Length: 445
Image 1 (cartoon, one colour):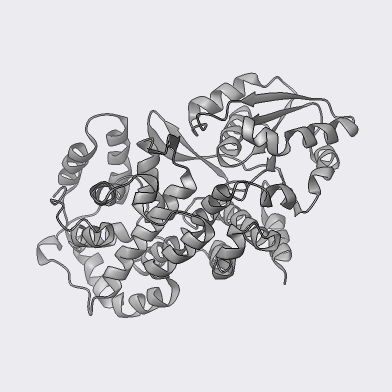
Image 2 (tube, rainbow, N blue to C red; image 1 turned 180 degrees about the horizontal axis):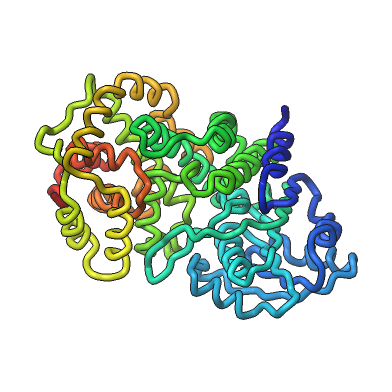
């Protein structure tokens, strides 16, 4: 079965995505595709970069098909930030009966997705880069009052991706997509842990959509960096399937684990490097290597030792105090407390979990070794694909990386390797190993 066949089956299962067209020259089909799924005029929404990549072609093809359209183009510098506020401004532009058409990559798709969803209308997406996995996902990762969260939304009804456009995108954007896809390696490990501990079972539909093809999609970093159309097509199809897996599962669990939690902290900090805001995919790439270094450290141990003092578990009150110390007052700390409460256990429940962990660890660790990549292998592939692999490449020093790892577990109710390490009393040591910050003073309790 070809990758296109796998994608076709995934689209057929989707509750919201009606058509995905990926291929060379498919921009010429924009009018016919629009006419199959929408009526009325279109509003072409893009930033200046996205418009330059595909906007005039889409506009001309729609006009030839007799479809009325108008433009709404926003500045590309500074790089648009994915926020609920920006989505609201786009929503205000739309008039009754109009269909939004997102032309661009990650940020533009996410804000248009949210705008369309809050109006209760479908939208069309014209992708211009293989830069992230959200084109077909049922969620928009947006910041609201400084806190980045994935907001449930319907994905695009139609996705159009012309490989001539995708392959011609700036190489750094393709590297971001490779970094976002690389994050599915540690995310898979995190899900395996949650499944083994009885916290969140692996979904037999969503898991193979991501994990079965992952090694192949990541296997040609040099060709991806060179813009080879076949390799970039594989990357784009992989990212698209990941989005459909998230929709099928009903959350971002198939695609997002500790790597994304670390990345989201930097995005909430509005991390800049080289006068530009660091992209989501670049943050995920570095978060992926850091997470895999923690896995390397954990799996190198002969056995899983658990600090006896941790067996009863840290109290919720102690975690809330730690969150306040780490984040300070404000919206982010408040939201982190809400997320932490959802997964917190202590006392007999924690003792039972640690007992189960020690029992399943021999088998679980063997499975993790068989599934995960080493951090060094991943860093090599990321570098060859044109993605960052170290904190220094995005302006994150060793101390900042260490502090980010220690804070990241509080951002989501999702159970990851960060929680396992914390519950075993090992997070501080693992964070030091992952960050290289051997002299950093311990953060938190």
